[in-house]
Length: 485
Image 1 (tube, rainbow, N blue to C red):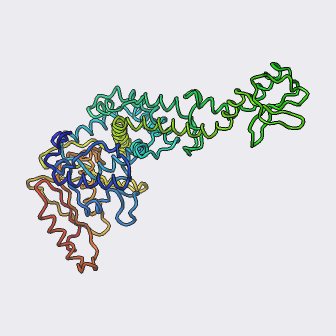
Image 2 (tube, rainbow, N blue to C red):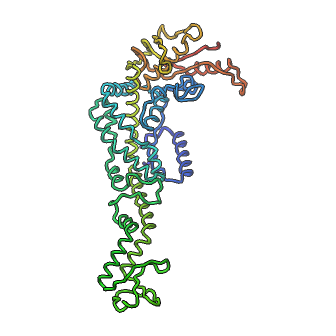
Image 3 (cartoon, rainbow, N blue to C red):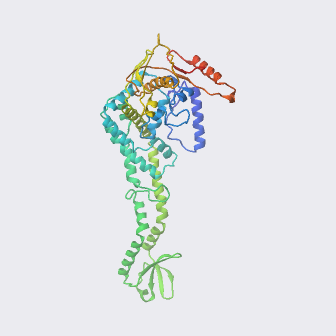
């Protein structure tokens, strides 16, 4: 483009500098064309709920606080994706919940439709099982580090696309329709790999055995030369015996002269004019012919030329795939979306989640809400569900009291998690839920001394509360657990 207005980036001057620096760094370190980086998407904080680090940690969105493991986090409950692309997309959605009511409703519609078509959804998930990480693959193809096995895995993935599309063709919700339209079956690339690359090629790219029989004539000839050389020589020997009448004619080989025709002195006068003398022995003469020379070339050079040619053809196929990077990336993105929606739908049905209503009035009304993670981990104990009601008028604050181990912290976190899940566009663990969109979730949960920076537990708490008071708006949700003890 002539200028950054065409990219919609005119007001992001600092962002452009930063993005340019990163591109420069990548160009210098990767020593490559980076053709798979095709667009720049500004992260607009106004589009997503702001979640700071302490909230991410305290609500255990991606990993647990103590063991730093996935098991026990919200991601662990929601992630039933089948592809690496879907898993990455789900993770980014958990870290960036939406605050636009229309976008949230669109996701909820998509999940509801998949719930209503559970058989189709499970079939889609079966097909997704065989889909390779297309985004990673495109990086490897662009860097020219993809090996033949990567291409056969790519072909297997492409074989699934038409089936996934046909299952999506009957869906009516807006997001699922757009996913259907974004999936390009990439039949031309499938046919190319199907025609060119062996079904079970080696990993190494320079040891032959990559290109299929019938794809390229010269490869077939060289391969035949490598394997059928002996039979060609025997056939030539038979033909020359018949043509000349020399009964004891032999084709032999040595390292100095290569292949030659050997005739004993008794048959010397039968040697035809077109034979060229190579060597004279006491009792025999050695000759060569144009045809024998050609065969010798083919047989001796076949292996080297075969491996070189196969590598060149493989690199050519890889180049052709690299030239379609944008189509493949668009399809990969669509696959990631359908994988995420199918995962959220599967989780919703398995765990009795319901569709929340979304409002902009600042009302959070949850009937029999449950903590999504605690409920899953304590599967043998009965989880006691609880109601929550908050609004912008008289019910702005709820103070939770009770003895240790009564479930106060669980109750507070579950409220935050249900709000967050609703804004991801997921169904939520409750009997009913009407969720007002919040712009931020602040949490202030337990603290430990930061002795290195000379701050007591109390000081850390006061700093965090001060931060909350400065940045919270009328639309923020605050969770303060045991503030100041």
